[in-house]
Amino acid sequence: MNKRIIAFAAALAALVSCSSDRNSVLKVYNWSDYIDESVIPEFEQWYKEHTGEDITVIYQTFDVNETMLSKIEKGHEDYDVVCPSDYIIERMLNEDLLLPLDFASIPDSLNYISCNTSPYIRGMFSAINPRIDANDYSVAYMWGTTGLIYNPDFVTDEEASTWDVIRNPKFKGQVLIKDAPRDVYGPVLIYLKQKELAEGSTTLQDLMWDSSDESIAAVEQYLREVKEGVLGWEADFGKDQMTKGRGVISLNWSGDAVWAIEEAAQVGVNLSYVVPEEGSTVWFDGWVIPRYACNHKAATWFIDFMCRPDIAIRNMDVTGYVSANGAREVLDSQIDPELDPIDLSYFFEGADSVRVDPVLYPDKAVIDRCALEHDWGEDTEKLLAMWSRVKGDNASSMTYIILVAAVVLIAAAYFVTTASKRRRKHHRR
Ligand code: SPD
Image (cartoon, rainbow, N blue to C red; front, side, top):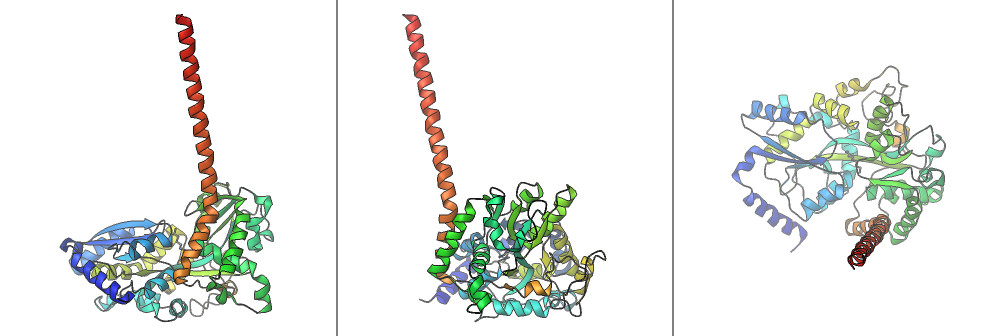
C-alpha cells in the first residue's frame, strides 16, 4: 500500500471517529507567543455572529516544528488548524497530510484571504514544494529571517557581521542558540561554505538541500566548538535572556529580535539584530488544515479571520513578528517617520522607500542573501540525531555531575548516621 492510500484510510477513519460535538469545537495548534490571545474570544463571537453557530476554540502551543509534526504524522491528532514552517508544509504535502483549502463558503464581504496574496508571498509559497503548490493548502501567517540578536555594548557590529561570532571565545557562556536544528544547520553550513559560495561552485539554494553526511559532519564539528560557549539551547527563552542582559549574542528569528529590542529598551538594555553577511534563511509559517482535522468549516473561518488586517496588526504588535498580510493598512500601521527609508517594493507595491523597522521587514538587499529551507525527507533523521549528539553531551555531563553529587551526599549521610550511632552506643557503655 502506498503512503497516499494509508493517509487516506487514516483520514477516513479520523473523520468517522470525529464526535458530533466537534462541530462546536475548534482545535488550534500554534507556536507559543505567536498570537494576541485576545483575538481568540473575538473569533468565537465573530463566528457566531456570521454563521449563527457556537464555537469554542481549544488553543494549544508548541515550541519546535518537529514536535508539532510528530503529533500529526505519528499521533494522527485531530487538530483543525496548525501553523508549520515552510519546510514542514513541504513535508506534510509530500506525505499527503494536508487538506486543500476552500474559502468558497465564506461570503465575499468577509473574505480576507485576498489580503494575503502579495505576489512575493505567493511566489515564495509556490517555491515551498516543487511538486505541489503550497498556496492551495496553506495561507501565510508570519515570516522573517534568521539572524543574530546582539548587545552592541559588548559585541561590535563588525563582530556580529559573521556567523562565526557564535564561536568567538570572547563571548564564552553568553551565547544563546535557538533549539531549532534546521534553522541552525542552514546558517552554519552557509558560513562553512563561504568559499564555495564566493567561487560560485554552490548556491544558497543548493545548500538548503544539502543533507550529505559530509556537510552534517562538518556542521556537527563546528557546533561542538560553539557549544563550549553556549549559555543555552533555547526554544523560547533566548529573547528574555538577552533582554535581561544574561546573553550577549543569540542566534534567533527576526520576530524574537523585534520583541527583545523593544523590551530591552524599556529597561535600558541596548540590543540590535543583523543578518550576517555570509547569508541566511528566510522563513514563512502558514496556517494549514491537517488531514485528521474534524472541523473544516470553523478551521477555514479561523484562517480567514487571522487574515483580517486589523487582526493581523494586533498579532504583529503583540508578538514582534511580521504578518504576511500585504494589505496597505498593515504597512501604514508600521510606518515611523523617525526611521530611515528602506526598499519594500518586493512586498508592497510601490513601497520602494518606506520608513519601517528593517528588522521587521527586511530590506530587499537582505532578502537577496537569504534562501528558503527545504524538506530532506528521511535524511531529516540524520540531522536530528546529530542535533541530539551535540546537545546531548551537555545533558550527559550534567546527569553525570548530578549522579556523582547524589552518591557523595548519600555516602556522607551514611557515614554521619553510622558515626552518630557508634557514638551513642559508646556513651551507653
Ligand atoms: N514564538 C514563535 C516563533 C515562531 C517562529 N517561527 C520561525 C520558524 C523558522 N523556521
